[in-house]
Image (cartoon, rainbow, N blue to C red; front, top):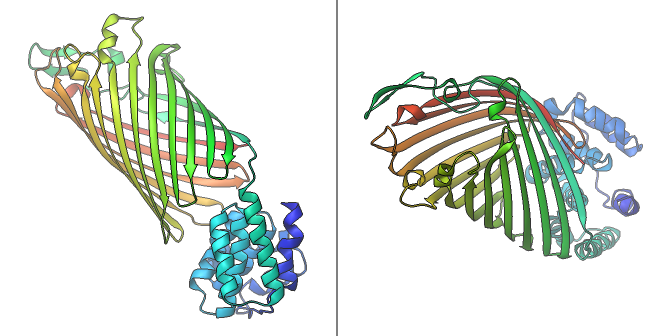
Length: 447
């Protein structure tokens, strides 16, 4: 981006002859404005960050903070601040200046459609000729960048450590009532087991664009869950996907094929192959919609017993998503439904099931570094037929879970995380009743 810096600064140096009145004396605005004018961007950004909690929402402060963030290499922070000014400023001069800088911030963050639209809005207000020339230059850069077809590769690593009071999602009861043979005593491995754990995730992504609207994505993800005291529930998961993406900045479509393998305590446990398609739509006023469908064949390893083949199912999953960005808050709703049909519809019919769920996510961006979040979900599960051993009823479960946590953007690329979750599963078969509380902390680094 260095080659664009002179052009980016030209709007400020030779652009609109607009002046913004300083805020009250106690506001850091005047000092930040002086530092930006003097080219002391880092000092201005540091001063703004220290006063962000108190002055965030004040149009004049947000404007100069956004300008400092943009010039200081934090364009995403600039976008949040300048969007507030452009939407709420009552001073027409300040609002127009904020729109111009916001268009630059969109350009730097590669949100080309938003940048183009906002530059055109500024042009309709007939700015001075030199500003018009700079905007036209930006519009040419936008078109050139859209036509670029550079492949990209990135990867990330995340690791957490925590405690889980029910690593196997099992009942806490040692004795379970059955209608056929009365009470049965569960082996210890079939009861609730508490342990501490570490969980490490590594993801790789390769993107190859054919055109500005069509690309090929290759994704590989590996997860290793290590329980410190109980090895039999350690999990290694590997998943790879190849997907074709097409569409514009409003509607995007994605079609992919994925394969996965799960090992339990180092031994084969489950394999899967899936086909998936999705649609994403960028609406107005911070609204986003999505639809997706996936067909997955799930098979279980039979090396420890041929009966495991009775668990093989074909799953059809549908998901509808709705997201609303409202100021500092992001709300997301996901409604999903799945049918799992057993490969053996006679002997394995009890493994067929249908489940429907609703999930809600809330992320609230306090400032540039800190974002608390909350997730809640409910799910209803109904099996297709009676369990063939011990139970003469069709299993049905109700599952509820809630998670609260915190993201801390410690530095560029590094996020520190902490969360706690509680899950309660209620079943009409006592064996499958359980609750689970887990907490963890860790980090994620994106290269």
